[in-house]
Image (cartoon, rainbow, N blue to C red; front, side, top):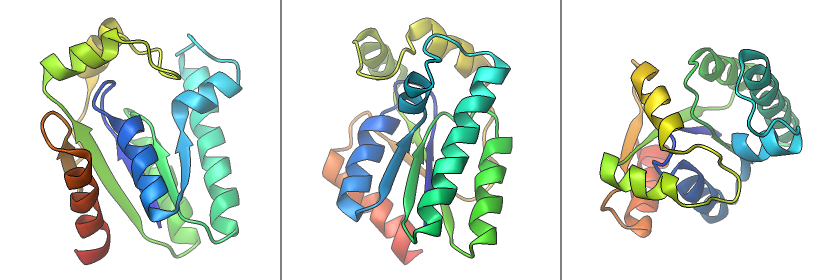
Length: 164
């Protein structure tokens, strides 16, 4: 299975994605970590973005070929990359699930003002991305990290991933 965790900066994607990957024993692939490894920190142009997402896809392909499940964590603001992941999954005949992370803006502001190990997205980046954010028009789980506990979020995700 490939799980795509997406949403705006500060919604808790990385925190949740890492915990879910640990809980389910899946490989966790994070766009911020890849950006840093590719030495593209602070660079968000279309070519840099393409490099990061292409590396995510390549790493996913490698893991899937080894019969490992994957969690992808990124904003996925360009929905064409979601389609590329779904195409990859289709080629390997494995399911893809989408989980969108959301949070109250007050919570997001608190989160993006703090230094985070890999993410550089501050409130200005959040505002720019929010202005251009497009909703995904397909079935997916939406998790609000504002007030729900970590364990509740994990349980909701598991129910969606395995029981729907």
